[in-house]
Structure formats: structure tokens, C-alpha cells
Length: 160
Length: 160
DNA sequence: GGATAATTCCTGCCGAAGCAGTCAATGCCG
DNA sequence: CGGCATTGACTGCTTCGGCAGGAATTATCC
Image (cartoon, rainbow over the protein chains, first blue to last red):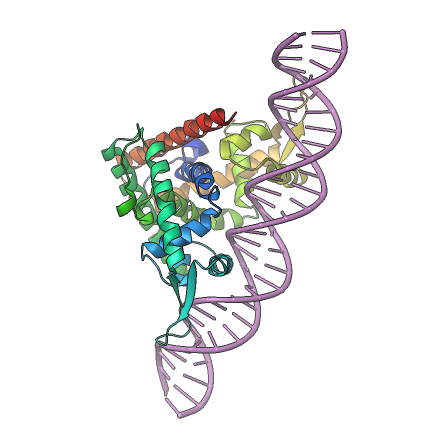
């Protein structure tokens, strides 16, 4: 029972959610990357550190599914951060397949220094939005994400 | 005069617009790419064809800025589509630097066949959204895009 | 009008993400 | 307990976007 949000005859890709979301993502990177790279880090390195700080994830696997990053690519980013002494890989006895990522003191200092820069930049660029507007945007984006996620999940289940 | 949408102390990247938008983009691709690739086209090839169909852009340059795709990368995609006889490059006398992209009959048939598949998939995945909800999401995304765009513009102007 | 700058498209190169396959560790089932 | 599937991290290969530079055309300015 799918709704008729779009119709093939009148469909313009400019008004598609996919187009708008892709464009917003790209623009967002253009805004935020310079902030981070000015301090010697790639944006993904920042993202990994921030994710660990927030306690959102501790294993590479979690980061992959949360942030939708490739497993192989993530291994290399973790390598870089480990070489710079910002985090450590710890093997727990509980499940020796998993690697637990722990921020070092240096890593914690680094990310705590970077986050205000990002927050400032975000506030600056979002100043056109009222608080309720931004709240609603966040709510709808979260709903979109969960919707897409469950849709993908059911598709994968159907294939199996 | 930037608002205090986010605060460094309480900032969680999970609730950042950037994170949500990136995730939505990635999930959207995972949903739509299989639809297109099942018919022998990459998603970008589809996007280029759709952009030309909509008359949104005729020159590679326009597509680059509209869709935020790299100029060099776009040249190669256009090559692929031209080799498959779906579009043609035309040099106009008006401005001989520009290349005008024209869909061939085959190209038009192709894109007209693909769009309903994408539209159906979109409607299916967005069925959880009411019409006003989707309208509001689109409005906010468009506002976000224009905001980011102008912000980037002013930053670039300041550098020059 | 002529030198200089700017625009448009293209090419080569590089780096990073995507993908598939490997290996070790764990879970599962009879 | 033993055999098979599954999970998690990693590695090599491929692909593709990002970037810098070049060539042709047009715009700008003195």
C-alpha cells in the first residue's frame, strides 16, 4: 500500500528526496571539512573520534553499521589514528573476534578540541533556522532513516 | 549572529544534521541502486539521463554544479553514455567552449523506462510519510541546501 | 585592438571507498 | 563433543571521485 507521493509523468529529480539529501550531504562536507582539515585531520578521522567520544560505538563493526562506512576502509582509518596514538585496539576475552577501540588521553584531548569548532560552524550555518524548524528537520530525517533502514532490512530478509 | 542550536558540551554526532543527512543519502542509494543496476545502468548514469530529460541542465558544467559531481568524473560518465548511443555531444557556435548534451531517441526511451521504477520504489519506501510530512521534509531540505550554498558562496568570496 | 584573465571541457594521477575473499573466534545443532 | 555456519576484523584488487594541470574559446580591461 504505497502512497502516490511522486508520479512518473510529473517527476522531476530536483524535487526528489534522494537528490536533496545527496546535495545536502555534499554541501555539508564542503562546509565542515575545511574546519577539520585545518587542524590536520581528515573528516572521517574526526567522525571516528567523535563516535568513540559519544560512546555510540566501541567496535569497528558498530561504527560501520552506524555510520555506514566500509569495513575495509575503516580498518585503515583506525590504523592511522592508532599510529598517531589517538586510540588503541584492545582484545577482550569475552569475544576475541571483536576489537574494542579506546580513546587515549591524547585522542580525547584532540576530539574535545575539535568538537567546538564543528559546533560553532554548524550553529553559524544553521542560523537561518528557527529552533522548532531544526527540530522538525531532525525528526523527519530520523524518521526517513529508520524507514529506509527497515525497508532495506525486509528486502534483505526476503532474499534469504 | 549564530544561534545556539548545538552546544559543545552536549553535542552528540548522532543528532547532527550532517550525520543524519549522510546516513539518509547512503541508505537511499542502497535502496535505489539495485533498481537501476538491475537494468544495466549505474546510478550516476541514470542521474545524468534524468537530468537531461528534465531539462535541468544541458551542459556538463550545469550538471556538475546542480548535482555536485566532479567535472573530470562527469566527462567519463558522458563518454560511457555517448558510446552506448544514449546521448550526443553538440558544439554550438554561440559559445564553442560549451558542449550541449542531447538525448538520442534511444536515450529518451531508456530514461522514460527507468523513471517509473524509481518513482515506484520511492513511493513504496516513503509510504510511512503523510503527504504534508513529506512536503515539509522537502521544504526544509531545500532551505538547508540554499542556506549551505549561500554560506559557501560568502566564504569563497571572503577568501578572494 | 591586443594582452591578460576567466570559463569550459578534458586528461593523468592519486587516494579512498567498495567488494570479495581469508582467517580466527564463536554460535549452533544434532 | 564434533561439524558446520556465522560473525568480526583484516587484506588485495578494482573502481571511482577529487584534484591539478592543459588546451581551446570567450570575456575583460587598458
